[in-house]
Image (cartoon, rainbow, N blue to C red; front, side):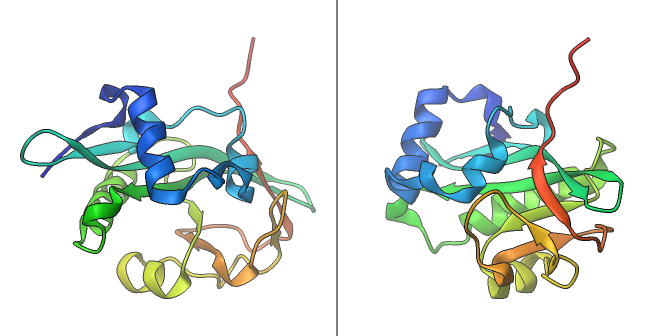
Length: 171
């Protein structure tokens, strides 16, 4: 398997993989509201190709912020979706591509790259990647979510606030 920048994959191929992995109703999820209007962070978003150079997995990372009710707006990165071709799920490809993205975030210096968050299975993401809900209990999302599935990694703030898109500043 080879990991390459996601930007080298055609957008329609990415969308097709996401549809196969998560179903056609995936856009109704709250995470899509958070990412609305954003573009992925190219340095943290990757594709995986198999031995025949077929596109089989992807991870996307997005610029978001935690708007604390009592003041600061803290830049963060939203990890996911992490998609693996359904016919080969369960073989560790999701872990491998996630580890690759997290290593890139740890090594990089982009705004908020040290503060990662996602919505996902707490047992899985805690065990393999060190995410937890320890500091996210007072965070909110713009739609329904299960509080136990709102996870973070790194020096994230322990404030009450809303996760929102971090749109580029237009001058």
